[in-house]
Length: 260
Ligand code: NAD
Image (cartoon, rainbow, N blue to C red; front, side):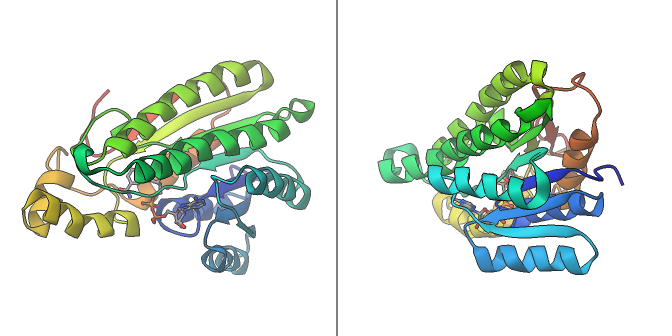
């Protein structure tokens, strides 16, 4: 058990990558808060962790809502006994070419990916800094933190920005025993990606099979999707890492799609 006695908040943990990370951290002994917009689905994940012998709580949290984030984080600290790990993972995707991208969609994307990362970080750091407890902050970036793709202006801009936020957290948090990283997955088959396949086929005028083969996997070394487990194992490694020898880094998990 690599995370015995630790507590974690994972946002967007009712589905996909966030769920896989929450389950992995819980298997290693962490008490995990499943924070998500979708409270019913968050409860189901927390129940599954608890029935497997782990410790979890569900939390309704819209990461764009300052009050919900501050109060929710305080509630986690009260209930689970502090905050050692934040995985800022909640996210959505809206694709469109720039000339057709609505300002409202642009702002919604920045609000969830970037404002959400800032708000959850600020709330978690206040607990991590208490009594020099320290901690680990992980942002869910993407290969799109380093590479661009058509149709994804808001996503690519927000995911690039997370690198900057993580580096500031690493510098400010270093003296107080807080480390920070960005995990940058390639395409992972989650509901977020499954929804994109027909949308991209329509926008690009190609078949769904071509979207998968060319757009999603064309840049990989082996034509294979990254898995939720690949990302969860990376998160576990970073949470369990014992020192600030690793901090302020981005870890690309993408079957060679992007090599840094
Ligand atoms: P998903 O759709 O399976 O899960 C996203 C979760 O976030 C959902 O449970 C949803 O309810 C929650 N959420 C959305 N808006 C929220 C908000 N305002 N507040 C709180 N929760 C909210 O998606 P996923 O593929 O697991 O994506 C998770 C993260 O991984 C995202 O940040 C995404 O950009 C990133 N990512 C995904 C892929 C991929 O290929 N799936 C690749 C790289 C990065």
